[in-house]
Image (cartoon, rainbow over all chains, first blue to last red; front, side):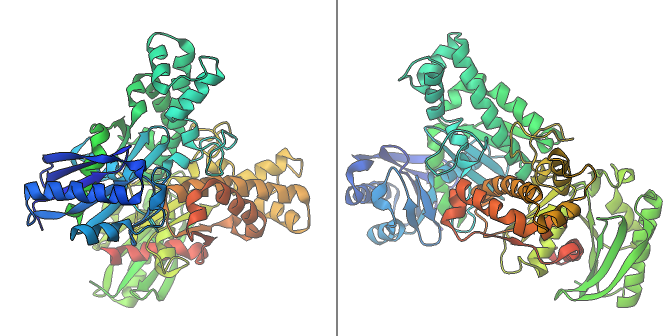
Amino acid sequence: MGNYSIGLDLGGTNLRAAAIDRSGKILGRVSGSTNLSEGREAVIADMANAIAALREEFGRAGLAGVGVGVPGFIMIKTGVVTDSPNLPFFHNFPIRDELEARIGARVLLENDANAAALGEKWMGAGRNVDDLVLLTLGTGIGGGIICGGRVLHGYVGMAGEIGHLTVNPTGNPCGCGNRGCLEKHASATAVTVMARLVGLGDSLSAEDVFKLASAGDTKAQEIFSIIGESLGIALANLTNIFNFPLYLLSGGLLGAWDFFAPAMLNECRRRSPVYRATGTRIEKAELGNLAGLYGAAFLPFLE
Amino acid sequence: MGNYSIGLDLGGTNLRAAAIDRSGKILGRVSGSTNLSEGREAVIADMANAIAALREEFGRAGLAGVGVGVPGFIMIKTGVVTDSPNLPFFHNFPIRDELEARIGARVLLENDANAAALGEKWMGAGRNVDDLVLLTLGTGIGGGIICGGRVLHGYVGMAGEIGHLTVNPTGNPCGCGNRGCLEKHASATAVTVMARLVGLGDSLSAEDVFKLASAGDTKAQEIFSIIGESLGIALANLTNIFNFPLYLLSGGLLGAWDFFAPAMLNECRRRSPVYRATGTRIEKAELGNLAGLYGAAFLPFLE
């Protein structure tokens, strides 16, 4: 059983880890000392060291297990990462089994967006529902689906690829081979590309465009409105499919909510009879970049 | 417990009912004597009579319960039909409770497309999987989602509205208020509309267009290819979302599979990294118009 678990988040450039008890209280946190680009052995050692440090502090006996949020596709049954642009050296590597062998404790892997969705369900904006979808709006768009209180994995663990929903069949090209993928029309990257298209600047960040919108620039405001329309199409499809009570947005673009949400909700209302007919909520996630850490730590408690 | 159940299907113009045992064997079938347009009391009496006849034949003691497939939105918890274009007199009527009171047995309602999906999972093309999506291609497009062996209902029972997925944001208008809904681009109705647009004829049925395509008419063939593209966009989104092992198509358009499937699978392959990366199957359903009857009968066994 155990009264606490350790969650690891490999989401950014560094490792973050936390020991969290069954009530969701963070007992302690550590950060890795290694840049995640430094290669497989360095990253695995960093993970093992973080786990060891927390375990030393909070006791070996009480540890329920270790959950790890990883960016990329994960074969849930085998615990293998099959595609992770940020961690290419983990490609087809049995990271779960390797880590279990080093630390001598149960390890559970989860896609980082799925982990974030689970974290929001456990301790965040979704704590009062059992079914939700989370969209993370960053340089790309990730998705996590919680169905009956658990992550919906699908056949091999690739469910929730919401960033690759087609929102415009003749839209922008995507590296996945498709065109019109949501993440090419509604991510931070899409914001910067549109800023360039309308002549706002060639090297503006999404944050820069947000500042322009806040200062009253109508072109910048229109960009977020267009972002909102694409999000609304995707959310209309999701609400029509799932009829879940709650859809959450998180990630770097969330600060621009006031600029994109009106168009998003309008588009969703128009396109989804299910959204209109039921008390569907589309809201901001609450846990920010801690969501993945919470969700990873929750994994051992779900077993 | 009970060793058999009774399934009712209100899907067409007449009632169909069957007693089916736990192994899926049809013990006996009856058809209603009433046209479903004859009003509430006539239809309820017809349902009660069909149930009574089957129960008389197969025994009161062995009846596990009654399942009813109904076209329209169903509030699963309350057993109320909130919207059924074919059965307007059932709107907001407590059909489940009324029927239970008349027959003195447990009644379970299910949307007809959901029931068909469940039937295919139980005894049809999905019998070896626990997760599938069924699309019924008729005058409209219905959807049913089976997740973990059960119907995915969502918040109030409106999940699976796949006919209203947006496949083209600037596409054809839909009565739901949206434009570009799948069922306005890939149903039998869409086939007839396209036949008119390309000058094949003003009053051709989808079957007529299929015959033209079979006879080598390239315009008719192109119509099914366009249908396939729209289906492929919807299926790409569904596979990216669910990563389920199986997606089934059924309904009146299924006969034109050879004309629409190549474009459909091509579009799905291009647009869905999940479809490409996993052994996803997109196939024909097997039970035809018996699927809903099987699924309705399966409902009491799931309790």
